[in-house]
Length: 150
Image (cartoon, rainbow, N blue to C red):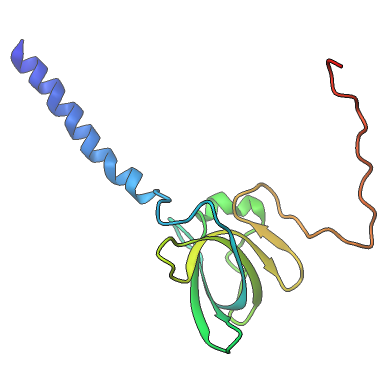
């Protein structure tokens, strides 16, 4: 009976150790998920691969100093439905990137969205490709429904 309990304990410990790296890989603890930063820059490289796509871009500050940024997205399969493609960016493209910055203060983070020079918005976290609102078009009428229960 004692050997049976030891075997179950050993299997349980082995499973816990085996699954720990899986959680570590997908940890978002390096990103400040309470902060969003938006920067404008020029694409250096778009790396389309598993497990994450990477966008390298350069951002100039007010003094002309260049910071080399790296933004991470999800795997290609998770962002294709949002309009992202292997050829979404090419070197020299001007982009506006919104991301959750790295906690260590280095220039990089988890990409939330990218606005292309054409105005097209690629969302990394939400379904569908969207475009910024066109100020020349009136907003759709809003429903004036009464809240239920009143």
